Image (cartoon, rainbow, N blue to C red):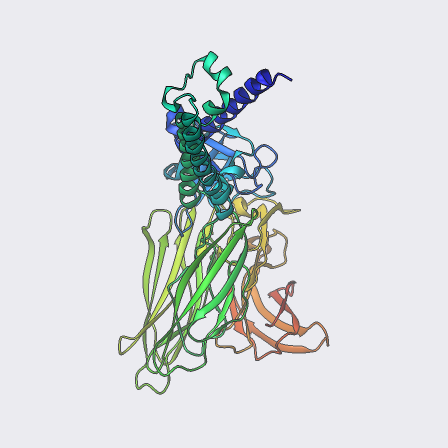
Length: 572
């Protein structure tokens, strides 16, 4: 049988495969060679079915002014934790006082991305994508890929070279053809095909392709692909703090699972999964002590990344403490409300001096609000508002000082978007806007009275309801959170109002906490209020761990009209 034609076809196919692999390698490794800005491997199915996990997206630089709804862009996430590139579709373009911003959404996601994208974050617009190639690129960057694509071919090349030298030596001794005089013309290939296949020129070309592919996979996998772990921190807390919440939300959006562990130092993880687990520090330390926590995130492809953070547990002989901080958008305006409690040890010979609050726009780093409030004695609770702020994400930081200059701080993050009410970004599970039935305009609140917003969280629950214009009062917002220091108490905050049109004012607010299992009232309080708006706050007595409670908030006006709203929550 004449194998010549078959071998010719096989050789041609081999060369074609190598050329295709080389072109794809250039597209992935050096996108500028084809006029592109960059290229990345897609690691999640958030853009399915238009772009699947394992595809390579090629990005082209375009003016941000030309971007419009429906375009697919790649941008760098504003979260902390290093480069975190996301490829999603633009679903809304907004031109406000701060310039252009874009709301994005994955085609497979039910909700839009939480944070708006600014022009400075955008790397480019999708030019085209190559299906499935990214899987091979990522595989080449693994240990098994190293073996299959580099080590095995290298061994085969060495064996082939040794065999070639042996064959040449035996061939020369028998009057054979000199290897260096090998004819690589078409006639020569037909007559000496086996030696041509072992040609140094061809072997070097194959080795160069393999080396280039391996180097590209290693560099791009390390620099652009795979999940990014961000353990947050460094964290600081006082001894005796119970269930301090860690923050791994700076990890990439492609992280599918989170695993936390203490790798050195005291304390333990009260929960070791999720983006925001709880660390349980020791009750007492003789001096400041440091623990190290490790976060490992894994994406849908099974690729993992790790990061560590330090946790300093401070001896609190003379330090004040910020026991808790609740920050949320105001129920009565477009700013931020913050409710916090601070304490100073009664045995240290001094007292509280002041509470300093700063609100920083995380988008540009500018301070949007700053104020200092007086504090006296050994305990102080304040509920204050910033006034109106623009749309964006804000970091609220409360710092307490005692008379000796010792300090403690706690922070929370709040996002303001349009007229929407939002709470701490790390605790909101979902937001839902719905038109409020039966709501009419007619006063200065009509613009926001047409909507209601409800969110539920792990650490506290906050609800914004639509105000009505009938004669009954309205509970505009309510929040239930856990008091600090393992007191097993709830903190209840509420904003109530009475319509201007019914010719009377608020009279009374009542809070009742009922055990849903036994039906017994575990806590009850009521107090008189006046005017058309009032803020209400109360701290319950100690409740039972693991029990579910219904918190009923009732507002009554001077005519006896009343409204009740409830939250159900379990005491940890």
